[in-house]
Amino acid sequence: MPNFDGGHYFLSVLIPIRTDVEQNAAGAWRSHVDLLREELALLPTAQQNRVSRDAERQSPFARNTLNHLARFVVIDDVVFNGRSGGNALWERVLGRNPLTPQPVDRLKCSYLFFGADIDAASGDDAALRRYTDALWETMQDELRAVLRHCLGFEARVRDAAGFFRYIKDCQVETTMPFNDYWANGLPVAAADTRLWPVLLVPGLTAAVAVLGFLLHLFGAGDGGWIWVSLVALALAAAMGAGLYHYLVAKAQAPLPRAPDSDLPSVLKALYLQQHFTDFAIAQQGADDGALYAAFRDFVDTHKPGDASGPTQPPGVIAAR
Image (cartoon, rainbow, N blue to C red):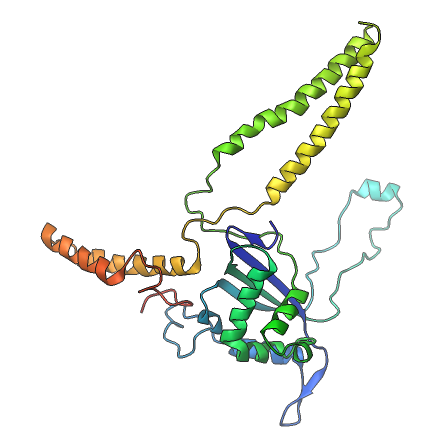
């Protein structure tokens, strides 16, 4: 399930950061990795808690309704997890000195990691292009300010098409996506339970091969059983290999989209959750007629079946 799973595209991008230096107006020389950290520190965060929800500036990623999550991270080097251990006796037999240094992976330069979890209909380039076009249209200035510190950006990126190619060239495959919208568990299709006859056929064929071999071993028949055994064994091996490739292909297939897991539906759910809580508190002790009228007004005002509005804006966790 690389990159795409459950109706979401999981984008992972590693972009090399420039290693040259830049002189500012005051004549000071600064490295691009330091300038990039400064730019990211000044980038406004989402209005997602009591401290930031009244901030004047909102995250530029909130200008579209495609990304559930987006994050920039500067990676200076890979983490050294320590020496690869082994059995002391076996290392002694092989003549290996446990004090001899082992190779340590290092990065040749710092990298900017960009990760995003976005709504998508598929995992193809068209889905990714739809997202990069949306970013370029809604936050081009912020992208230029951040990515100008990365290798090749200013020379290659002039428009939305160039931005897509730049992201595509730096993309790495996401091998472990995270889905958390199947609230009641992923349903198992009834058709999956019909797989047991397919598993039974190679097993029966292998049993025939073993039986033929045993009959030949104990001298039953005129020797024909050995050929039956060899043919059955070959068939069992072929069917087993085919079944293995079938199961691997099925395992690679993306999970289905969870109901109402697109960002507009999630925002609508957050909006209704908060406003209905206020409604329930306000209606404590109301008689049946008043409660019915109040609920009718609630439905008319907040339109639970309409994800387009009224709803919670992107980048906001707590309703104002």
